[in-house]
Amino acid sequence: MYVPRHRRPPCLVALEDGRVFVGRSFGAEGERTGEIVFNTGMTGYQEIITDPSYKGQIVTMTYPLIGNYGSNGEDPESPSPTVEGLVVRESARSPSNWRSSAPLPALLAAHGVVAAEDIDTRALTLHIRERGAMRACISTVDLSRDTLVDKARASPPMVGRDLASTVTCREPYDWPERPACAGSERAPLVVVYDFGVKRSILRELVRAGCLVRVVPASTPASEVLASRPDGVVLSNGPGDPEPLADAARAARELAGKVPLFGICLGHQILGLALGGKTYKLRFGHHGSNHPVKDLTTGRIEITAQNHGFCVDAGSLPGQEVKVTHVNLNDRTVEGLEIPALKAFSVQFHPEAGPGPHDARGLFKRFASLVRGG
Image (cartoon, rainbow, N blue to C red; front, side):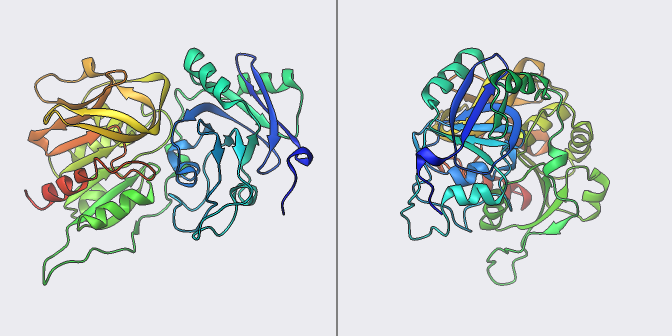
């Protein structure tokens, strides 16, 4: 039911450094804490709020109008929204798209996502750019500025948090979509570690001709090898990679036995498995317009990204590991390759969802590896 803007309840966003932004609610009533970040994507808000990589975060959209094409049942990257909260300048109340099945506010309210509009998102984004990503509290039930700032300061920091265990699947399962194989050709089996995997990754693997089996984040390497996979993918996911010691151990034990492909958090886990270290970025990379240079070809690709941590290039073994991609904004590591182990990884999202598809060919590259190419 449409509620006029002036009748929507207040919603406050309080940051741990004491800054408070006042807006109005357009989602569920309630209160959440999390790390506040900004996303520069102009479209794809439904994919963003359902991306498990955003678990533990309150997302601010820099594009001023969000919700203009509504929501549908085809675009979600997971069964339900995973963000802790959503902050926008203005929410569209009358979506205009033939695929829309519900307005964005209705989707947020149905899944308990607290959301604020009428926020000066330009000022908030500039504040995060200057001060760095920080803890925040978004609330429609407590309108005390001082109390909300205290709640933000009392919430857990992102560093040291194992959030992958909160979004991973509980049991292994076979992804139902299957590749179209010519004649009697056998489709290779790829096992995907679910650290918060997006559906788009699974679909791209199928499009590249692979059968896909998804396993929980804590699955030992021995169990994966027992299924005789042709390759293994280390998926994207939320939080700090360093607490995921079991995942790094599994990747280390798999390396050299089967081809490996790491994406985002999976890239960081592969870096840790190789003996490297990771560190927290000041405000992270979140959006669909990040330029990355492929050092092997010299090609520049525009990529979709969502991460707050990065692999330290100086911590990697020099001769064995090649840095293949760098971010052109801050020169951070965006890709690794270990040819002797048939393993490679990227920090960005080649599946996009949302975003450009400049790097989609990486799935074909991995499929070629698992076929023995």
